[in-house]
Image 1: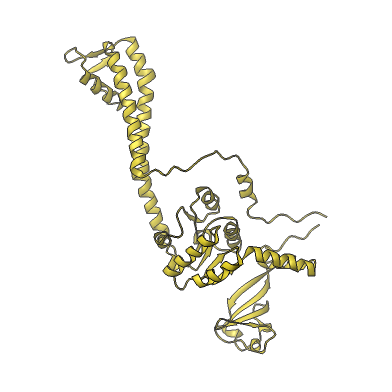
Image 2: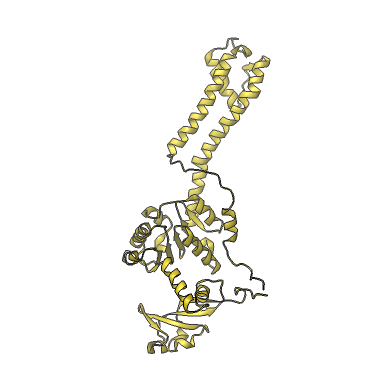
Length: 360
């Protein structure tokens, strides 16, 4: 029996990650330091050409007074490197012309690239990035902010896109450029920054977000991020991943609406598999948009008010109602008459095009 086709949205990204990557280490160099290094390299090259011209000054001819002084050498070097070429000083010997062709020309190109590259990095590129960031910020409202792009959040971003959320409505913040490169391939907005800083979260308009997903890899960092987000966005829902049981309460006290413990969830799946071979499979089916069914949370419609949870207009199977923040099970009497403002959690079948392909 053939296996159904894979629906894993991260297969291509995994293949890219398996390819060779060069060894590198981030150099924390300030802007003025980078600019100074470039200017220094350019002046070293110019000084080298001046020295070469000075030692071979006999091969140069000055059309003004016939004497080649050190100032003439400096002057000729600068106009030669900048390709100005007034013609008042010119190489006349074969060796001088060979030096111009073999040594000075490559130096001229190198200096040109240094100055053009510096102008691009410090003027054009930065101005363009600021312009693009301003344009993106103008459109950020009702977006999903993902803080940390490790294993958990990379899976969640892929699942959000599979559920139909526009990648342009997702913002990923992570200090790792390598992780952000993988996120950028999905079409989301990315920002290399520290998510614990106020200015970082303000830059992505955290207060206008629809929800925030936090998974920093360390529980202490994740809880600090939750505190920062809650301070700047008191009403935005926050979901956070913690791995230690004793940190779940701290995460809720920090302001998280949902605290997810992947270790505990894995334990639940394992324990469920003991009671039945298909329980863990069904739970995974519910959690993924690629399964045959999925869990949906929504506010009841006006037409559903007064009805029972078993008579939902969507045709789904109602499991639980949240009324004023209190959970009510489908078997309880209060679920037999839905009220305005109730939030219902139901199981609905996925669209036929999204359902898993039958095995052959």
